Image (cartoon, rainbow, N blue to C red; front, top):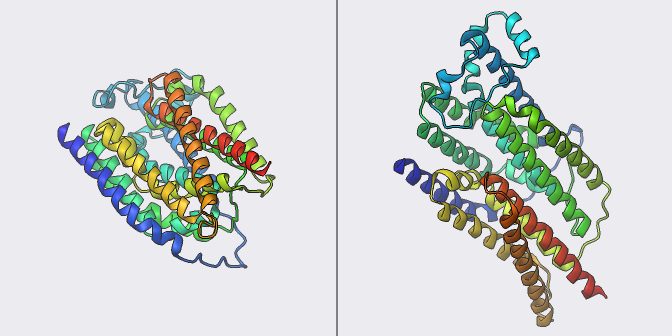
Length: 392
């Protein structure tokens, strides 16, 4: 366990440091021209939905395999993994009927861990790409054609393989090989997909624009957690309990994305800083995201949190450098903007701390998602109030 902890910590460090160096070059490069003849829009959200569907199809096939080949008992694999896995829906009448009539169920053996081993990388990369495209479609294309995409693929795969090795079972070697294959194939497919993307979305620097983006980020994060809980941990039996929440989150997400296309393009100084800061943070966090997330579980939590804080501070510094404060002619303007930004960050930190206190600590991912949402919403609200008072 200590060896895995050390390697996860090394993964956190080796993913954060290169990201800090390379990301500045990504924004300097000119965007590639979009071909006028290519009108297709290959949205990562569409492909994310497709991959999610494949994950659940595999869950159905796995249930059929366990029912027919192992008599409905998943202990042949469950004994190698922690508590909280393999809560199957084997009593569901539709699945039992499907299992009874399924031909050659032995051919479904790859549904045990191995298919998921290939699909998990595109699932997480597409989820991150979806968020980036909602914020700035040009930034999404820049990342997809830069070294950040293969770096993220290698970083995520290394972390996945370390976790695989820590949870060793008879399928571990197969899973590691499959994950390595996915780390090569997935970035090539995503880069080709992004090259055909003709989207021009960009979040306006306004309170409604940022709140819609944050709401979209929160609902997508909630749906990702549902997929992990019910599918990627082979807990299809929990889907009935999670389904009302998932449907409500999906409906809210669709409503938010519909509203995003109708938002006005007004902007204000402090809110503009926040848009720039989020843009830089997504860019900086892209490569070390998974290493930091698993660092909280399998590594040293303080190191992982420090790495996350470093990316946030670096994003704020870079965003501040981009802000046209007119400091050369009006030093007071820069000072006032800095004070407003400081107030927003402090208020956001208070909001995040309060969210952590009221969130049940059962899932660290839920607590972190809630804290991040509270930080952003509080910060946006304070930025909006400060910009409004400035205009008045």
